[in-house]
Image 1 (cartoon, rainbow, N blue to C red):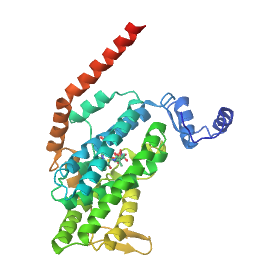
Image 2 (image 1 turned 180 degrees about the vertical axis):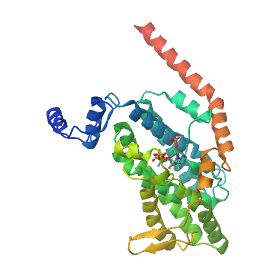
Image 3 (image 1 turned 60 degrees about the vertical axis):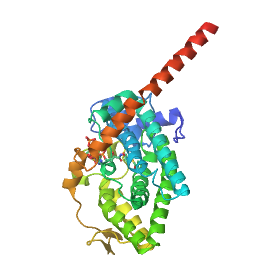
Image 4 (image 1 turned 90 degrees about the vertical axis):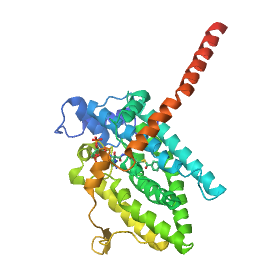
Length: 337
Ligand code: BYC
């Protein structure tokens, strides 16, 4: 498998032997594993790993995959109503990219020993989470701009560090995902810029979309560090490279000047440049809303889940046909022998 660690096996063993042995881990195996993490080695599917590492990665990668797949729905809502052929083609290409991201991510998660069927079943039965952001409806065309600009923008900020996450297959999948997300962010920003520079009504639409998507987008980064139950361990294992609050702040600092450049106003009366921190201060987030959406009570949670369940049962014939074809091919190969 690929690795960016250029040391020979002998050099790695020597480095491990010289590591301090006072690490607080359950077993010698866990300590050796942590040393590999501390040395910035990638962990690969056949490597030994603590069960908890496998479990937390399976959780995060599968939730990420579900988010990509459910994330196709709010945008799919506008394919038939895109304002021009050009916009329609771009939107279709973006949605197809999201399907591809879901596939890479399910494949990466499968290397940890859980089948795609089990993961999909966990989504459809409501046991698995997916990003809160996709439980908000896209009610106007400007929402497609806001989703690309803000949601994909937030995704890039969150996912660039994942290109150096400690699990090799996840990190490699993220490299391609980030390249595509960057095109998605630009197309969203371009829609917003066109609307913001258009008629008064178009500008109003763009501002209204920003007003509705801003807060959910900054909540996408997850709870505050103090409330983030998984962060400490995930940071120690270098699954996460930056905390939820750090990434949220980075996104806000990058996005405010973009809004200003197209004449839109971030809907936060407390937003203010802090000279000392060289960052923006911002107002309180509505964490009650966030947790309600996580628990399934967002505006669109039920519709999203139902749409995925229906798509799965309506697509059963495709899976059955593919299996029957594979079996036919296998039988033909045996007969030919
Ligand atoms: N929504 O301990 P924490 C995309 C849960 S795809 C729902 O901080 P963690 C795109 C969290 O799961 C976007 N649940 O968790 C696609 C945990 O509960 P469990 C998706 C959330 O994992 C199509 C609990 O709250 N991106 O961009 O350390 C079109 C405590 O949180 C959320 C990814 O999945 C949320 N927003 O950190 C356009 C990136 N936030 O699981 C765009 C990969 C938190 O213990 N994932 N929870 O029951 C990550 O980076 C991390 O998993 C998170 C959360 C930062 C999201």
